[in-house]
Length: 246
Image (cartoon, rainbow, N blue to C red):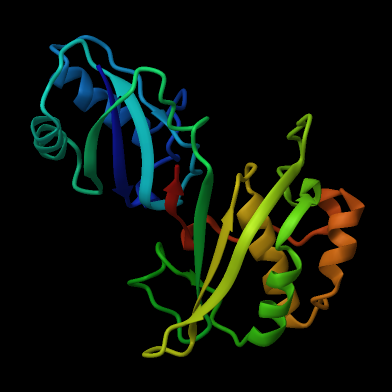
C-alpha cells in the first residue's frame, strides 16, 4: 500500500533531506521510523525534492510503500511517537500505486527570511541575520523580473549539468513583518527548482538591495547563462520549503 505524507522539520541539525554517507538526514529518520512500523522490513521514502543542510520545511511531501494496509491515523501517531521532536508528520493519506511525490508535483513555494535589524542569537538558525538595511523596493522590482519562464542556468549549482535549465516562476512577493519592520520574507512560487537556485536568487537580490547591482541587472544575469554572473548563495538558515502543490 502506498502512502502520501506531509511533514515539517527544523533542518538546522541535519545534512539535508536526502541520505548521505555520513551524518544525520531527514530521510534517514523517516525510514528508520517507518521500518519499525513495517515489522522491521526496510522502507524507502521518496520526497518531492531534496532540501540542503540547514534548510527547513513547513510542508515537505513524500511517499512510501508498506507491506500492510494500515490506517492513516495509526501511521501518523506511530511516526510522531518515533521521530525526533524536530521532525513532525502533519498528514498521512493513502495514495494510488502510481503516485510519485516528486514527479506528480505541479509547483513548489519557497520562502526566505531576512533580519535587517539587530542580531538575534535566538533566531540565528531560522532567519538570516543580515543585520543591515537593504533597499527593499529595489529588491521587489528585481523579484518581478524573474517571474515567467526563463533559463536559470546562472542561478544553479556551478557543477550541475542538466539537459534543460528552463523553469517557470509563477509568482513572487516580498512580505514585511508589520510587527517587526526590520524583517522581510521573500516568497518564490515556481513549477520547479534546481539545486541552490532559490539561495542563488536571494543572494543576488541581497546584492541588489545593497546597491552593488541594479534590479535591471537580472535580465543580463539570466541572458548570460553563467553562474559567475549571479551573486553568491544566501545562507541556508533563512530558507524554507513552504508548500508543494499537486
